[in-house]
Image (cartoon, rainbow, N blue to C red):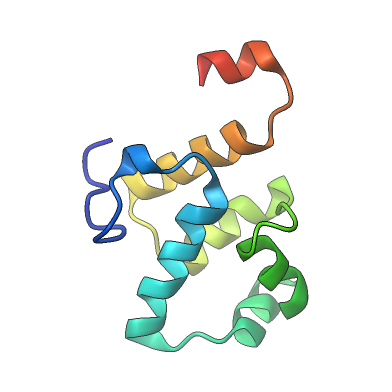
Length: 102
């Protein structure tokens, strides 16, 4: 997807099959610039820091109600948000037919 080349220097957009990998790369990049803590991020997302850590370590999924707030928290650009939403649907859907279209 054009415009996603800078998300992580070691990955291209085609390397992502899970929104949590995409988020983790965003988190690491964001940490270099702002030092946003898990506690602060969790408070802004109205969740616990342990839950946020579980999401980023791929032990849990975020709820659909957290997708847009996460994109805003990480200050994703339009193309990055769109790709993040797509990856969320791709990762969390259990419908094989829908997954085939994604």
